[in-house]
Amino acid sequence: MQENRRNFLKLGATSAAVGVLGQAAAADTEAPQVGAIAPLAAKLGLRLVTFSPGPQDKPRVGVVFDDGQVIDVGAEAKRQKVKLTFDPDSMLSLIDSGDQGLVQVHALAERTALLRIMRPTVNHVRLLSPIPRPRANIYAVGWNYLDHFEEGKAARVDRVVTEYPANPVFFTKGVNTMNGPFDTIPFDASNSTQVDWEAELAVVIGRGGRNIKEEQAMNHVFGYAVYNDTTARDVQQKRHGGQWFKGKSLDGYGPMGPWIVTAAGLNLDDARVISRVNGVEKQNASYKQMYFKIPRVIAELSRGMTLEAGDIITTGTPSGVGFSRKPPEFMKPGDVMETEVTGIGIIRNVIKAES
Image 1 (tube, rainbow, N blue to C red):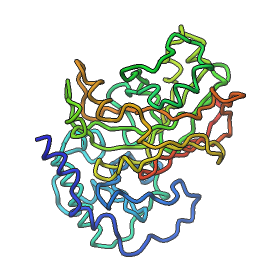
Image 2 (cartoon, rainbow, N blue to C red):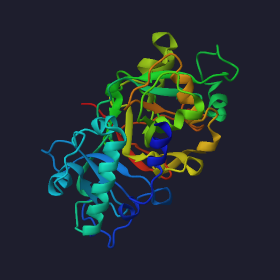
Image 3 (tube, rainbow, N blue to C red):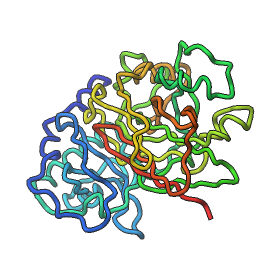
Image 4 (spheres, one colour):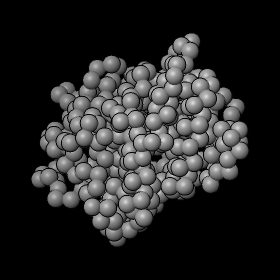
């Protein structure tokens, strides 16, 4: 079963037509949210979005082509008279459906691509977080880049940990941190004035399990997304006994997107994690620089603890965060935080003062 799932996620035959449409969509006339779309690894996999076609429309699941056109999975299923095994308005339902649901989406997208019908582009719909409301807290890995651990030593209030841990460091972020890839991040100066950036690669679990073996861990991955573990440093370090949870769990402090690239669509070894603030690059590191790679993270996290389909794991941030800079740098209202994972895409969030 595990090998079957992994092999399916590597399928290229059905996705070849999905990756290439004959003509690009007409130029967008509105200010774009999404710029150039990163190519999928060897044209494998899918870009899966949660989107709303219009302001009054409910969210639904879509597929994004290379030229930016968006397929409404539910609408296409009705048009093609396909009975889906999942709710097309819910990414979590698609993930729960396993291989059967992904096979249906691949086939729908392939047939739609062959029709060459012009559809709305990503810049003419509203993109939400791919999983707008996680079922449980987001799992996060701390200090997963050696340079980030070292850069924070002098700046951290808590000096208890001075040597790099032998096992991954885990914490969680509350579900209300989830934010859209192009939505604003609230800034409340009465609560925090030290809002910091942390670019990360997010992993979405496709098949749950407990005591998952490291060598089998990648069979449990549904896909990947861009994530920013936005953090209120003054809350994190100076209040609540220095415990991380509250400072990392303010509402909206976890933008994610712009889509989920299914597991076959990203070559991890080529992925780089990048952040920019107001166009100035702050972080840039490769997946290869992660100390604990994804298989180890999944294996350690699942030891004695069940992971479920749809769980989100953020894999740590590189060096270059604001609080460890000299002098420290923090974001303020009006600043634009841009987070990129090469091979997936870019999310862009404006810091906005709360009225």
